[in-house]
Image 1: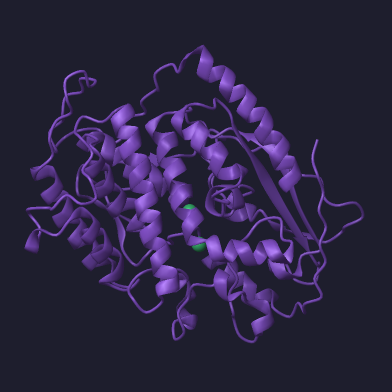
Image 2 (image 1 turned 180 degrees about the horizontal axis):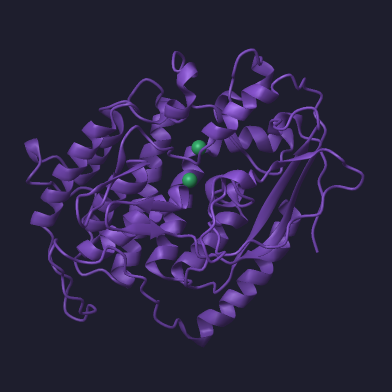
Length: 414
Ligand SMILES: [Zn+2]
Ligand SMILES: [Zn+2]
């Protein structure tokens, strides 16, 4: 059972070619920066560009929250995999492509236009047919990368990430546009549909991998918050980025959905989240602070209640290994605001200093905490794949009720 929504917008469509380029550049929140993945286990690099928010800083936050080194690595890798899907280094390949896509949505009644979204050509699959369901180009782009923080998407992801909800109930989205151009923008769509579905990610509910996926989406919900308000007002079924490729006009861009700073427009692939670091666009970079704090709060809660082996540091904790013993909170602010989008190497270097300082002053959890030996930083598998502890009949019952309510809400919302 699903709900249809057809919206026609009277905006010109002379942008097919340009949007071919835009499609290539489309990316999830806290977009990839000009820096590549560095394997935390082996220090080998990959040619996959990553976000320093989803990788380096997530590792730092996980350590500060009290997770073991191994678990902190798992969290950072699986957080980045929500965007990257596959990361291959010389010796290792990480992938979250173990899900399956649901049957496609049937197009709107009478619509003969071309399918614009999902961009199946860019959605990777594995050799055995398993799929990268978190793909930024797939039918779950909106669900994983543009979730409403106070909406059913984040509620579902949170329940699933913590293991309170055994099923991840979300929605898939499809867009059709005119046959004239192979690619049209969301602006020119003649049919934009969503339908509620149970998403098979292949990840066990409540696992660290699922939790990492949840905190990725949580961060993205801050990054895309203003964009979301705009596209909601336009009646779009979900938000996405919009780009002012010439000769398209201002009518074809939504400022809030195009984070490329002025002067970077010719290099959109590198800078479409360019406003979210530094100090020049406080409206955008302040949301990054908020995202970092929200992610840290969830990591600290998770660590305390489950896998953590050290006490979470308070944000006011002075980090002795950092110049002037800045507090954790102050260092996080420096990470976000001291360098611009195109200075990720500086951010990584600073994150390394933060990690060293945090590792030097963590204190083990009090007696009664789950015993988990702290691994040495070397020679350990970087991913855990841990299965969560059973949450009990009460939680399962609650989850069923929550899932039912959620489904109702999803049907109303989309
Ligand atoms: Zn994303
Ligand atoms: Zn984005």
